[in-house]
Image 1 (cartoon, helix red, strand yellow):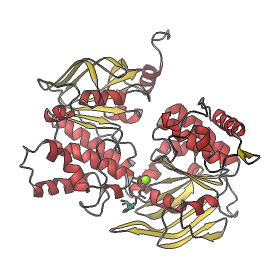
Image 2: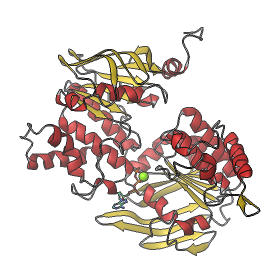
Image 3: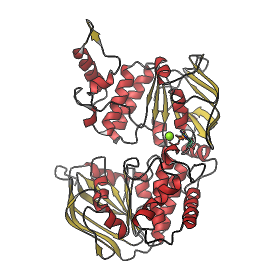
Image 4: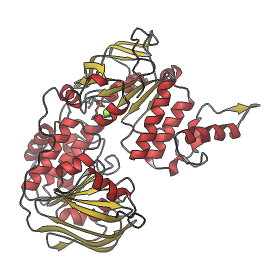
Length: 508
Ligand SMILES: Nc1ncnc2c1ncn2[C@@H]1O[C@H](COP(=O)(O)OP(=O)(O)OP(=O)(O)O)[C@@H](O)[C@H]1O
Ligand SMILES: [Mg+2]
């Protein structure tokens, strides 16, 4: 982190004055103020649905504000579309990437502004420059690789390379690290520092408070579409940020009761499938088993294989005495298994459908025999979960596509809770979720365990896995490398088991 800009008399790169934006039934921004100075990293934080992405979409020209004023370099502007925003050298890195999958990395980086020589595209320069940019990012990607062949994390870094190439003066990032590994986050942060040295202003949206303390100079908190506070990060403690965000004191983040272990509910023996070998797992009633691994360890594949959504090539899975058919999610669900995948857009959410119907989907389609769930009960149950998980929506009838990212995730979570499964597999259930709602999700998991459910909890975030799991398995390259009881697990042990190659390490 470089020294925060002290000269607050300098002309802001960007200023929002009393910006309001309303959607049917929702006030997304309510007279919001915001100032971005040259050379600063300014974090924007707030609960799910607070209005962060709406603000970014106004800056990027995607949305027009209903009222208020926006200034760039002191000039009032009114963007009619993204082209106007780009013309003012604003670059937005969305969480949903807007690269062209069929084009190469280099073509994407220079999209719309290919270097030319004698009227022709100068491919040598294009690929040479891209190579330099990628090297600077520590990325060993061939600039000629089609973007569609890259992992999401790599694509995200390419987006950022593109921001560099375009000589942006304002760079906006909406939860950029959600798919990145620790090393990739480090690289991204080094890059942000370089942008900063060039006087670029960076607006950074995240739910991860530790990131804010690593890179931000100032922070602005937004709650219910309103500006709460803007301050230098060095003058705050994480506790202050949380209190400003949720508007109240947050008590225990990890509620954890001692639950008597019941009989075995789930037994997976010698399971194999895509990149997974000899996977064994036992889950008892009342138990929360954590599964930890770095990106690429196979954690999410395991989740899908257990549920039958990815191919199982060997091994057996028994749930509460009955054998689960391989490759049949319907069978897994019927026998009492639920899966919340890490990928909410691809698996599960039906964007044009209402909040209520998305919640009750699994109950209706797969479990018509549970017809006691009449429509009124269903609405009552749905209302209950909207309150429990503080899902921000004007009504149960709102289409899920209009909910903020975190609130969409909560709807999926509610769907499985409503089904009352015996075993629930939760892959990254708190990704993109604000800290207040995270606590609520942990509390729900704790309650479910008390009621005798077995939970398999996959996470790449160590604090939450240490906070909530009874037992933790660590995976690396498709295999379980270690198992720890809650009482003995530490951050160091998990990291070591996840990263160190046992064959080459003397310590192991
Ligand atoms: N196009 C839209 N139509 C209707 N409502 C919308 C639309 N876009 C956003 N909203 C609503 O505006 C509010 C603010 O949403 P926004 O996406 O800005 O939240 P956010 O702070 O980015 O939350 P998250 O942390 O979950 O991403 C939410 O209540 C959301 O449902
Ligand atoms: Mg958002």
